[in-house]
Amino acid sequence: MQNKTMTILITSFIFNLIFIIAITGGILNFQSKNQQIKTLTLANESLNQKVSQYDANNKTDTLLNTQKIKNNISDFINAEFNYTNANYISRSENIKKYVTDDVYNALKGAGDIETPKTKIQDEVKNLNVYLTTNDNKTIKALVNITTVYSVQGIKGKAINQIYELELTQPDQGKDTWIINKYTLMGNFSPYSTNQ
Image 1 (cartoon, rainbow, N blue to C red):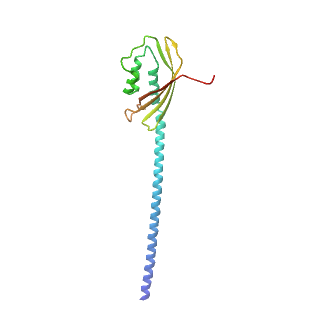
Image 2 (image 1 turned 180 degrees about the vertical axis):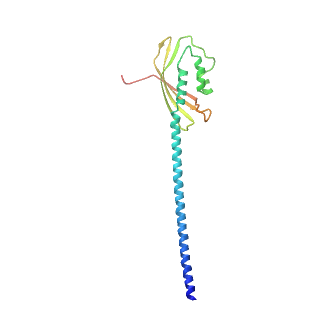
């Protein structure tokens, strides 16, 4: 009887020992799985950030290469700076679709516009536009315009004008951009050290 009790105790002890080892192994395996889950979660967050950055960069690149934005700027510049007596007054109305009311009123000035009595002409000879954005909601443009102004058919020297323009979308979701800021940075006469 004592032998049988001893056998049962030893068997019970062995089963309990196996059970304890199995549970301990399961806990260790559970902790290992928890660590793997944390590692995978961090890796997933890192990849999501990279994808978001890539999407933002791709959107910025697409935005800055959008022909509609470039056309808006060049059409505005041509409407504003390519004129003669014949279209001197109508150019004011032509620029209205490219700019906000505030910019339009600033460009138009106070009072009525009258055609000069003297024969005049302003002509854009060169246009360079440099675009950037920080938030994909506002486009900044540095615009370098070379114009030649004529009075009574006599052409003056070429003048470089540099403007800073800011464009925004009045209706989010639509692919329409409008100039909401127009700042003359200065007029510059060409200078070259190459003779």
